[in-house]
Amino acid sequence: MSTIFSKIIAGEIPSYKIAENELFYAFLDVFPLVPGHTLVVPKKEIDYFFDLDVDQLSAILNFAKPIAKAIESAFQCKRCGISVIGLEVAHAHLHVVPINTADDLNFTRVKLKPTPDELLEVQQKILAQLKSHE
Image (cartoon, rainbow, N blue to C red; front, side, top):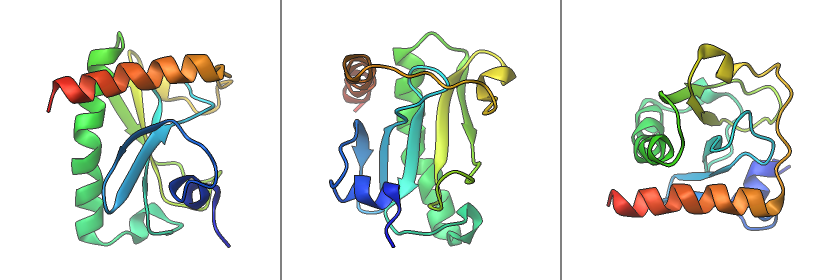
């Protein structure tokens, strides 16, 4: 059975895409901890993050690096933090989150509920920074 992330990657569920290549797909978390919170997922449906092979583990970080740099440029933050939780969706994924304190990566906090227009604005900010760093 396809996960919600596989349906997003296949275009069956709309998303606010940030980047894509043959192995990975990055899109905004629609219930972010903070604006700019982005998910990076392998296109291959694998439940547990550390079941990715060594090459994929390395590649996911290399894929996420320019996205993190773009997020850091687009939002007022000290850096991007990353987290692997993997409890809500049975599809490996990496959270890339702009942070100013360690508490900004606290997944027990109430998540934001941005409007589609707010998500589109966040997406455009990140995409503009990605293009300026090409």
